[in-house]
Length: 256
Ligand SMILES: [Zn+2]
Image 1 (cartoon, rainbow, N blue to C red):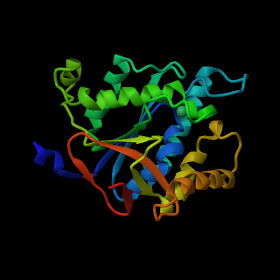
Image 2 (cartoon, helix red, strand yellow; image 1 turned 180 degrees about the vertical axis):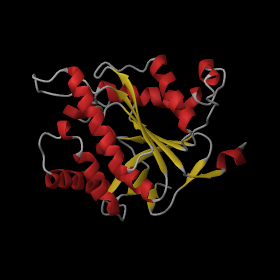
Image 3 (cartoon, rainbow, N blue to C red; image 1 turned 90 degrees about the vertical axis):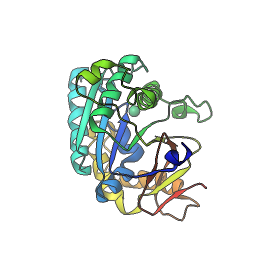
Image 4 (cartoon, protein in one colour; image 1 turned 45 degrees about the vertical axis):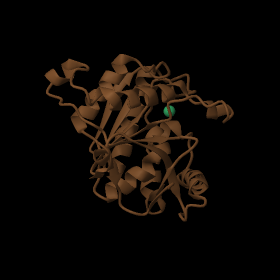
C-alpha cells in the first residue's frame, strides 16, 4: 500500500476548475502557459455563467455572460487549451451542491487529468476586504475537491456517469491556488508574456487597463510569491496527493 502511494506519474494532462471566466488567468495562467510549453494538455472548467460581474447598468446578464464566455475562449486560444467547458451555473449564486459536484466529476472522468488546479475552498477572515473570498470561489473549491475524491473515483457514485460511458478516474494531485500556506512554487518567469496576453482578453473585467498596466500588476504579484525561492516570478499552490505523486519538470520548488 505504502509503495503504491509512492509510485510516480508523469504529468501529461491537467484541468483547471474555477468559478468565473478570468479566475484562472489571474490565479494560475503562468503555470498553464508553462505546462503548455512542456506539452501538457490543459482543459478549463468554468462553473458559472459570469452574468453578474459588471458595474455597467446598460448591459444585461445575458449579454455579459456571452461576452465573458467569448473572452474566456479567446484567452484559452492564447494559452493553447484543449478545451474550455462552461457549466453555466448562475454567477454569484454558486453553491457546493451535489449537482455541481456531479458536473465537475463528469468533466474529470471525461478528460482524465493527472492534476486538477482549484480554488481555495475556505473562508479566510484574516485577509481584510477582498481577502475574505468570493462565495463562488469557495463553493467551486469545495465542489471540485469533493468531485476529485471520492466522486470521480467511485463507480457506484452517480451511476448515470457510468451509463454515459465515463469510467471512474483517480486524479493524482489537486493543486489549490490562493492557499495561505502554499508548499509548491512554479517558476513562471519565461511565461509572463503569454499569461498576460491571455489575461488581456478579459476586456470586460480589467477595467480598461493597458497591457503594460496588467503586466506590471501581475509582475508585482508573482514577484511577491517568488521571494526566497530563487525565482524571479512564481505562482504558488498547496499540493494534495491522492494516490501518486506527480513527476514534474524542473525548476519548481517544493517545501521538504
Ligand atoms: Zn472570480
